[in-house]
Length: 353
Image (cartoon, rainbow, N blue to C red; front, side):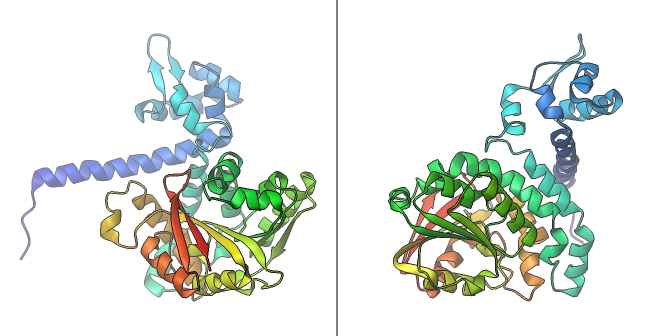
C-alpha cells in the first residue's frame, strides 16, 4: 500500500536537495576561482568584472558569468550602481593565501573524485573497489596542496605541541618515521625544526616519494629520507622513538597489520601519534556532526574503495574512536589517550605500549 505524501515536507526536502546541487556547482566554480587566480586577484580590492579579468589575465565574459554565481551564491558582494564586486576579507581568508584556513584546495579534491563516479557505480554492482593508482597523480597533488598549508601552520606548534613531552624528545634527538607520508612535507618540516633527530617517511606512491626527496634536497636536509614501502613491512630495527600517521591508517589495505607493525617498530618508551578523523564508530552519534556527510562521502569515493580494491578491510574515514581504540589495543598498545587537535575534524591518538 502506497504511503500518503506530506506535500509540505516533500517541498521542503526538494528545496534541501536543490541546495545540495547548488553547492555542487559552486564547489566546481570555487575550483575555477582557485586555479585561475580569481580569488587572489579579487582579494586585492573591489573591482568591476573587466578590472578583475584584467588583474587575473582572463576573459571578461567568463569572469562576469562566474561572478554572477559568486554573488548569488553568497561568496562575493555586489554594488549595482558601480557594477563592483567585492570579496569580503573574511571570505578571502578562507579562499586565498598559504594559511590552513584556506580551504579552496578542497574544491580540487571534490572535483577530482567526481571524475571517478562511473568507477564507483561499477563497484556498487560488481564489488571490489577502485584502485589507488587510478586516482594518481592528480589525487596526490591535490592532497599535497591541502595538507601542505596545514602542516606549515599547525604541525609543530599544533599537532606536536599538543602532545606532552614530544617536542622535548625531538629536540634532544629521536628516531622518527611517518607511515603513509605522501609527498613528505610533514617529515621535511620536522627534520628542519629538529636537526638532532632523524626522520624517514614511508609511502606506496613512487610519485609522492619522488616529490618528498626533491623537497628534502631543496631544503638541504641531511636528516630526512624517504622509502617506497608497504608499511605492513615496516622495519622493526632500529627501534623508533616516534611514529606518526596523518589520516593514513584508515586507508590501509590491512590496517590491523600496520598497527601491529607500528607497535613492533617502536622502542619500549616510544610513542605512536595517530592523527585521524574525529568521529564515533556509531552512525547515530555522528548525525549532528557537521563534518560527517563530507567525510562519509569522501570515504565512499576514495578511502574505503582503495582498500577494498586490494581485498582490504575497507575501514573508511569514519571508522571512529571506538573501533580505533579496539584495534590499537589488539595491536598491543596498553595506553591510548585521545586529544583534541588544532583542526576540529581531527583528533590525536597518543599511543604507547
